Structure formats: structure tokens, C-alpha cells
Amino acid sequence: MRLHRFYVGDEVELKHNFWLHDEHLLHQWSKVLRFQSGQEVVLFNDTHERLYKIIEITAKEAHLEYMTDFKRKTPKKDIYLLWSLLKKDKNDWVLQKCTELGVSHFVPVLTERTEKTGFDLERAKKIVIEAAEQCGRSDIPNVREPMLLETAITELADNVQLYICEQDGTDVAQTIDQPIGIFIGPEGGWSDNEKNLFTTKQIKHLNLHDFTLRAETAAITAISKLVQ
Image (tube, rainbow, N blue to C red; front, side, top):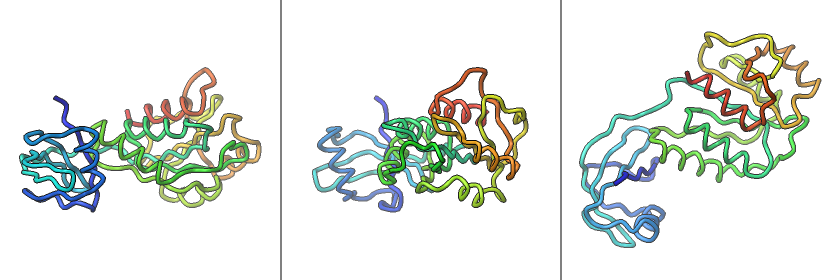
């Protein structure tokens, strides 16, 4: 049976034996997943990842017994994904899949051709937590509020090696220093003003594919190249 993993952050101290009183987790365990005494679960925070056996469980509390520690699995590279906000549920898809691939920082950006400006930060955080839980990742990516493209460049340029994705880019990233930041443009592409900004700021290009990719596909492709 597959072990279920749950991120508890600072809300729960992962002691060797303790009674859990987290209402959200207990509802999920008792009402949704129908956990029973004797089943095992994995709890992790920013320091530990531990296996516990459920000794007793009710709707209000669960007695957990420590079994063992697991080796934490975290991304090997420090990657920033800066993508122009997309329509409908495409942002959810980018957050989920790029968490699985190993993005450490999600920075939604507002460009001249961005078609959607609203962004539910709390929903986004839930999506990356659930993705980390399911894929076996032991850390949770940071998700920022949307910011203007120029603001993002100004904030990160001194400390992050930044790249822009363009089909006809002339520079190909070979050995990339860390941390790494990758810009993914909107469906309509970068405007001339934004291209001039990239040139002025000396942002390098990362070639992805011979064909024109949708923004969400470009994000996945770029991160896949960078994590290799």
C-alpha cells in the first residue's frame, strides 16, 4: 500500500510519540482517507521526514508512534520560474508540474500582454504543497505575489543568473551558474519594449525547441532542461 505523505510545516512538532490535534489533517484522515489504527503515514516539515504508525485515531485526535526517519529529497538546483500569468487553470498546471520537476521559487510576472492579472496566492501555496506531498519532495517551493517584469529583473538580477526563453534566441545556455532564473512569456509573446528591456539588462537566451510552444509547455520544457 502506498504511503501517504503530509507536510505539517511549523504547525506540528514531529516528536517520537505524540497526540496529533490538527483539525485539517484529522478531517482528511478520518473522513476522507478513512485511516484506521495500525496504518502508517509520513509527516514532514522543513527539517525532518518521519514515518509514524497510527496507534489510535478519532475525529478529534490521533496517537502517533515514531517508526523511522527517511532521507530528505530536495532539488539539486536553485531554480526561479518567472512566468507571465496564464488564463484559466494553466497556472495551476505550471505550479504542479514544475514543483514535481524541482522549481524552488515561483514568481508570477505581469507583462504588457498578460491576459490575466488575478492570482490566488493561498490556492497556489496549497497546490505546491500537494504536489510536493505526492511526488516525494521534502521541501516546499516559495510562491510570490505577482510583480511587474521590470521589478522582477531589478530584484533578482544581481543574485540570480537570468535567462529568457525565445524560439529564435541566439545564445544557448551550456554551463549555468546557480541560482538560475528563467522567464516564460505570455501567449502573445514578449512586446518590443520588453525585448529591449531584456537587451538592456543583458538577459541571455535559452533555446528550447524548433517549434512554437505554448507558455505552459515552454515552462515545463525549460525546467526539464535546467534540472539535467
